[in-house]
Image (cartoon, rainbow, N blue to C red; front, side, top):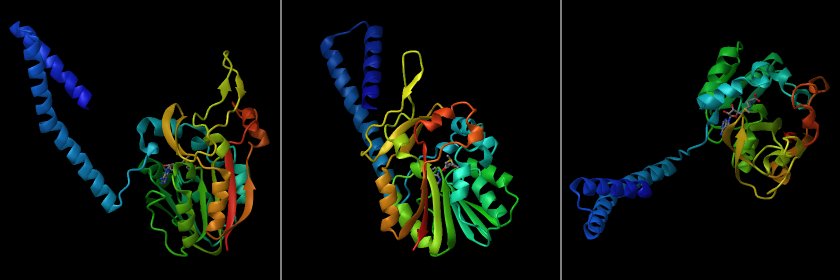
Length: 307
Ligand SMILES: C[S@@+](CC[C@H](N)C(=O)[O-])C[C@H]1O[C@@H](n2cnc3c(N)ncnc32)[C@H](O)[C@@H]1O
């Protein structure tokens, strides 16, 4: 901001000096210094103070600014056109595996974290769940989910996974599909999910595979003709935010190792009951790009039981 301000001041002084025809170097330096100091004192410092104050308020009130990419119109429109968004669960490459790892939902109270368009909530209701709560940070995703859902036992809550008020022993099953790579602190998720599950309750989720999230670009390495050479894994042990390209847009995701996923679950009272790195169903392999999904794991599915 200061650089821009200084530039504006310089341009203005040069303009004035040119108009008056007196571009004297001493006058110029004096005027520039005066104008710059005036600008910093009157405009920049108060703005900086205001920003600091707002940041402090947010910290004190516990309000944390989270990325909510799915409410970005351009990204939302692109995501809405993906096969998994138009065709639902049957169009999702990993669904045949995820479905086989889900518990019976009959008579259960189910929580879906990062429910998006609500496909899994609707599925749980169809399978006889007593109640289903879908939580998502995106209003646009939830709006679409509500339009699609005809089951009175399904309700949607607009909240981040981090801030949701998890009721103690309030659920028999917690599921999540492809949302946890947007969450910085998986340990915290495990604490909360463990607290809200009854003993013997199920926790089943999918997330982008650490091999997929590690490097950050989330793209293949190509030769000069644009042919895929290989998938590169780098920065594997650097667990942190990645700025990725997804649907041609910049999207923040969080990379963590397989060890972290497993150890967080074990640390918070879960027994691992299943783990899978799904490949697309046979009948999908002819679809564009699907055969390449046999070359590296894109997703990870873990099933766990609260003990
Ligand atoms: C790839 S979509 C998956 C949606 C749905 N679970 C599915 O599989 O069809 C990821 C979803 O996670 C949601 N999400 C991302 N960060 C979130 C957060 N911090 N809290 C709650 N939801 C979040 C997004 O808004 C989006 O709906």
